[in-house]
Image (cartoon, rainbow over all chains, first blue to last red; front, side, top):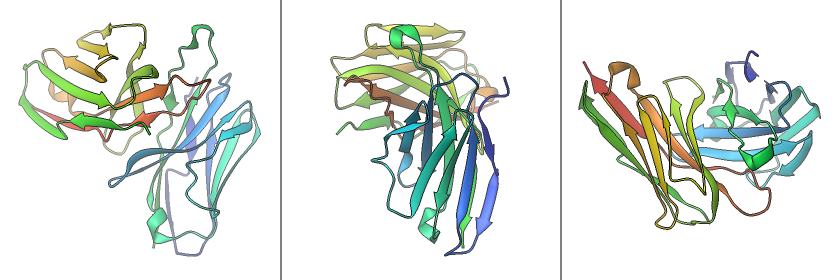
Length: 116
Length: 114
């Protein structure tokens, strides 16, 4: 398997523009997570899905952020409108539902977002 | 609210030295604890996962221990190599229900000098 795939790897945009980040989880994984990493706050969970359904979105910072998972192999994280403080590295991760509850999370390479 | 702290924030050692990275967490009601490695500009790679019922896990030169009651975990790296240079993060998963929300520490930046 190719692992978790994210695109684009780098995104530079201007304040006010819409940004869409994409993620393809590992095939067969039931859970998908979106994280944001900054120097100040470290790695924070934004939202996670189970079987394409959002389970916990308490980490989504504000209404400008939205995430969807239309099918088991694709998810998007959208920021509209973007602001300079949204600049960060955004990671997608996935994990399978296994018996015994061992749920190691596998991370994608991340998307580095810069909002000017 | 769970808080995870990693000390030190940065560590520089000569090649060949054995070293210990520390992770502490405030809420001992955890399901498991996971150690990750992050290389500059890259994603996270899982190194070891310890279930709450376990005391330690080993993989090659790495050994992770867990003392849930005291809220501590350590990652021991034997015979360090320059290729071990990276940021090491620990993360805990809560025990409550089927919550998969990991809480991460801010990491320890390790530099192993040749």
